[in-house]
Image (cartoon, rainbow, N blue to C red; front, side):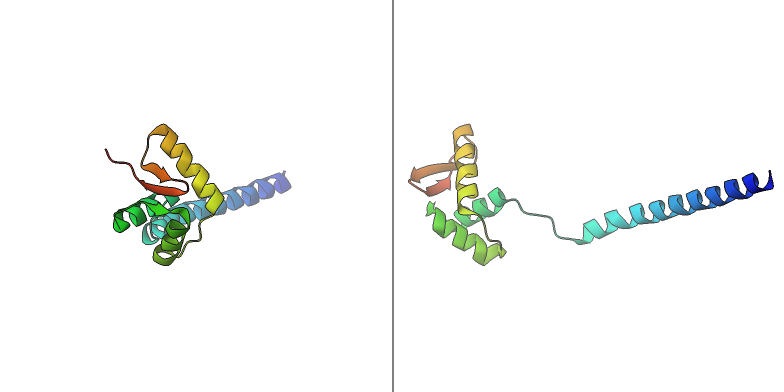
Length: 106
């Protein structure tokens, strides 16, 4: 009987320790997230580049400008495909020539 009591006491202490650790870690995580910069989506970066240019740009110019301004290397094929999907939905962008995109005028 005494072994059972010791075992249960041990298990309880381990469980309490784990709960305390989880509580401390979950309190620290939101604070760490707040200090980090908010992630900018690929579309947001492209939109900012096109807005700053004030005119439609070729895909290679868009990728170069995003690389320069945001230090992010975008994948040409993935970005082009995603932008075409946005255009088909009538969102954000328009295509003015092959591989040349601008901002959609509302």
